[in-house]
Length: 369
Image 1 (spheres, one colour):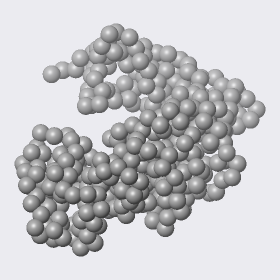
Image 2 (cartoon, rainbow, N blue to C red):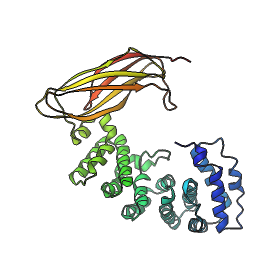
Image 3 (cartoon, rainbow, N blue to C red):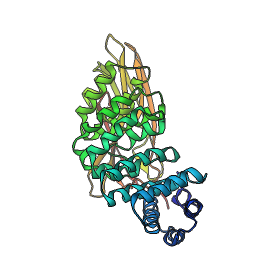
Image 4 (cartoon, one colour):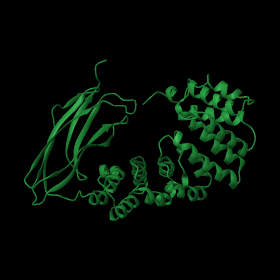
């Protein structure tokens, strides 16, 4: 992923200022110009917020005036696109909320839909959802019938319960079923871009209400198109890793009569920065083909000495009666910014159709240097 300054940097501020001066030559963009040199120490979202606040300070007046300026810049400036849209849409939402009134609120929603093809309005949409969830969802519903795939995706992505980088919407967290009409309208969308958002939204729901996610997916599978099975698989991926019985059954991963060997480790000690190698086998002892989702769980040592498991995907396959599937995997302990490793005893298990077996322990030790 690019660095923050490659997404929202000085060039973003300059492009936005140029677009605004094109449509408002007399505008005094003091705060926006100053933002150009203030971005360096900030993270990506903080950069967006800084530019948002600069816009609100430099373009005083009521919401209608602010919205006219934004629409004019969008119409007349080819550079009014890309990552500058994030702070612009955030400013639109903040201006409407600050002014109050249903006219500004409704127009802000419409303006976000107009701007979303230029990047995405999903982050700005959250503020409006927090302010008046019912009114916002009523306006978002018709977006599912938009001719624009970007607008249809905004309906799903902007209302996700656990949208990355975005503020949480308490009403959606408390009642995840509130967004189901949007997903029901879009799970068979012609655009893969939209369907993937629907699947990620369903996965978010599964983290809050597993049973609701499974029931929803089962309803979709009763009225599928050629892409529905893929949407459901992606949407239930977290529940599959967790071994949720309903999700596994819906996807065809039923109980099977198996003989599982392993995991067999190639070494009992692994240094941080190196890889753990292991093998195993799964033999189908039943009389019917066995559809299997095969994962493995690494139990990482925490700072307090306890272990916490994280599931990793290995493979999905069908094993015929009497057939033995031989498996092998190398798991990296390369240092990442998202995970800190603690030396000490660790463990690895296989997980097949949600059932764990064959726990093998190993020692993780500090690497050289």
